[in-house]
Image 1 (cartoon, rainbow, N blue to C red):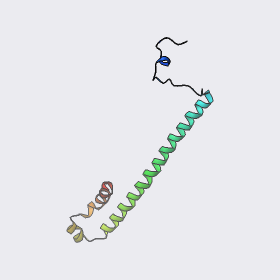
Image 2 (cartoon, rainbow, N blue to C red):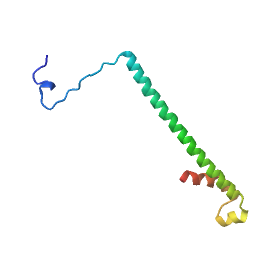
Image 3 (cartoon, rainbow, N blue to C red):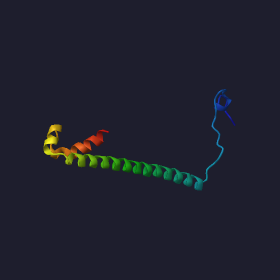
Image 4 (cartoon, rainbow, N blue to C red):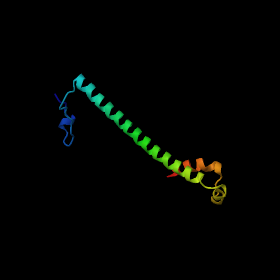
Length: 96
């Protein structure tokens, strides 16, 4: 029984209707599916970061190899000390 002035009697007010009542089993399955989906996204993101980090590492290693092949005089002309090669290579990759 509805009271006078309740939401169902007011025009323009939409009341939600329940179309399905979840059983305990369905509720647990829904929670498991949602959890699996969340875990799946986290694993996917982890692999994506892993691949990106591997690419950055490879580029930095190429830079280190190329700079290490230069003579001390050539490095000095560039304003780089031999001891700075590693940090420069990885700083360049971080800024990209």
